[in-house]
Length: 267
Image (cartoon, rainbow, N blue to C red; front, side, top):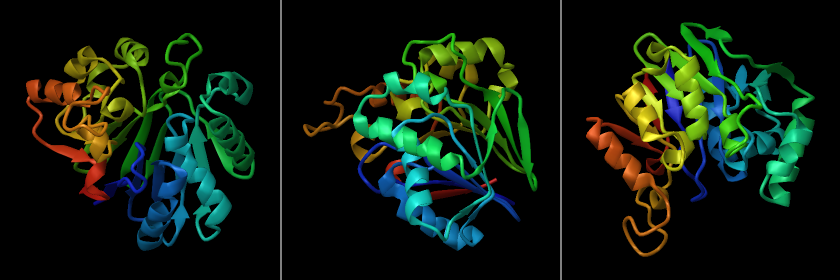
């Protein structure tokens, strides 16, 4: 049986990263920020001898690609065989990035990826690692310009012997509508659903009602989980608590949350 590990938060920043370990392979999706690199390197040392057979990415924001950049620069023991993504090209991305730091990080990503075996993904691509399949349900299209970088998120479905996962990255409302239109409903319905954009400001309530999550994976630190900007529960500007209410209305009772550290799921 394979294992899905949700990485825990180590910097108090929102982030997303997960690792899938099969009998013979190690697969990473995103990875988190620069500050999450030590955690990932230690997990890989324990589970795969510091080898990554495949590193998949959803989209190029710092809390999803920063760990990869830092691993490449500062953890030579981690050997990465191949990376997979469908990012807009560098010149298209740069005007949409928020800070000079993020623009530099994206430039580093493209530079470092030139030294790796890189596969540019297409919708419906499928990859098998022992008994685990990873299928690409959606890739970036230039038609959606709203909430641009988040809506470039590649969406994945992971299937193992006894479980399935829907990985949404930071997909926004527009990307969610596109996904409902173009992807068969049965492919979007899984045992575990990763909540888009850390559980707030992502896809719509209509999308979640459509896919009917069974169990929710939240890439959310404690302050975001509770919408607490410093004045207590649900006093901040984020929509996490509203999304939690949506899930309660849908009957979801099991939540796997980044704030609780690394969590491993056999599947």
